[in-house]
Image 1 (tube, rainbow, N blue to C red):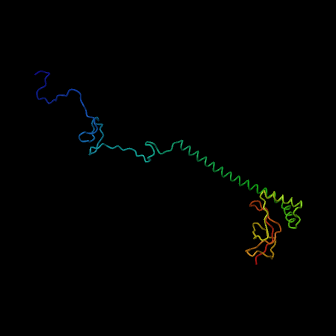
Image 2 (cartoon, helix red, strand yellow):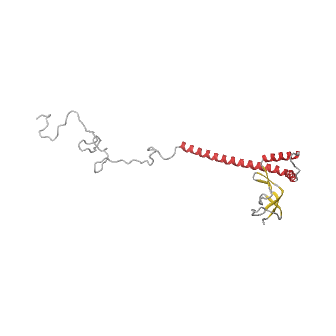
Image 3 (cartoon, rainbow, N blue to C red):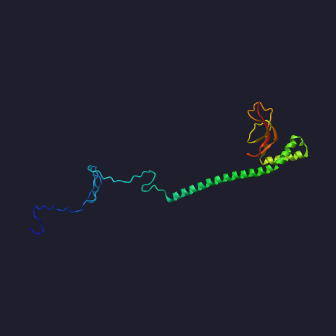
Length: 219
């Protein structure tokens, strides 16, 4: 026996020579089960009793349209754009209200100005009315043409004359100077105008002067 020879019956196995082939397939070709081939010892994932791979827990995205990993907080540019849009809509609403208020105030100022002008002309208008009642403004007379032109000019500015015999008495438009006995229409249900001493005038809905009348009650 030499030093280079092993004793007969030694337990040391003869080491294989040549290339070593390792099966790194994930599935066992015979059983079809997942195996941990090729994974270094100590780093293999823990498996359950049924030899199933461990399932990792992932965050669940509640919004299916939102990409995973993104929060529900809006982008700063989106929030700023929404704020600017809200400011613009508020300014537009304020402008519309302002324009309506200005238009209403303008109409009221126009009515007050025209009402004051008509009120200063009431003595002249009353004289023209009396002249018509007495027949002094017959057709073809020079002053009749002047009176007609004056009425047409004032009508263009919204002046309206009201108050006729037979109208139902309205305290908002009539001023009763006398209460007399007289004939009223059969369908009258209350005090009725039977005589007009001075007609009333209004501009739009504003009464410049109520009609001064005499009224009678139905029998």
